[in-house]
Amino acid sequence: MKKNKMIIAVIFTFALLTAVFAMSGGGNNDPAKEAQQIKQDTQNDQALQPDQIKSNDTVKDRLGVDTGMTKEEYEKFKDEYLAYQKKCGIYATDNLYYHKTNLNAISEFANHNINLNRLYESCTANDFAIRSEIVAVVSFVDFSIEENKELTYPITLNVKVHEVLMNNTEYEKIPDTLIVKGTNFPNWHFDEVESGLTKMYENKDDKYVLFLSRYNFYYFSESHKEGRRKEIVDDTCFEPFTFAFVGYQRKIEDNEIIFDETKYPPITISLDQFRKNVKEINRINDIDNFYKRSYK
Image (cartoon, rainbow, N blue to C red; front, side, top):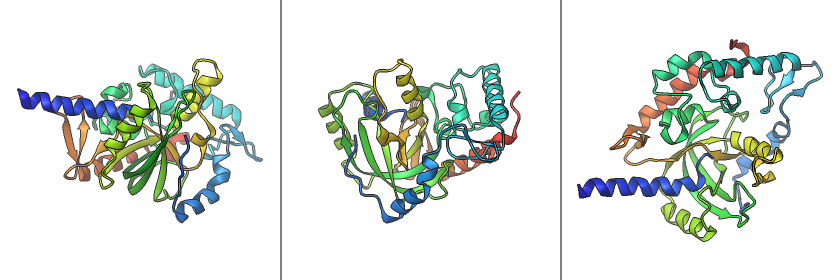
């Protein structure tokens, strides 16, 4: 019984600390030359706005992907997607649309223990993968904290990328260094956040699987503009190669990660098997053909 209590305490502590930057100011970031070159090459893409019209009257999405549709066709397509999502009984937000989730593959996703309607606190690693733009194996380099309670994302972490398991961004290549923004949802004093992160990342050799996306940057920014949220999302969140956490990180220990932390004991999975899972999930989702499918 004592052993079980210790295991529960460790899991609880880990979840509490990682909640500092769940869902995924500025520091002295010094990215690799490769990253700087890629940033320069893709700066124009980052400046694109959703529904941008090209000279041939087709629409580009937020990531600069040509949808092949006129503005009217694009708006109809999105309306049909969101209506079909509602018909499927999935909560009425557009994060699945942002991630170009294939609603026609719900049954196939279920075969991989993916539930598109599952709450974040109950998600498996596969659930997080389908809700991400990037899934990567990383180690944490350093972090900084902007002591400003008006910011939604006061924490900036620099992470070293060891392996990219999935890349569904507009970037053809992911650099060796990424910037990850963290929230302070528990509303801790900033000293508590700093001490918690320092303790968590004191071993620079530790590796983690991270699930990253930029959806919440846009969502929280719009929420602030509409008066539904006091905190702001500053411009640093929209710089190239800057992402937020999706759910919780997964620490790699003995080549294994936690697949489902809601179970007791938590269900683990080998990193090799998770690589295969992500590859298969990406194949099923097939975002390259997102705008070519019908959702009715």
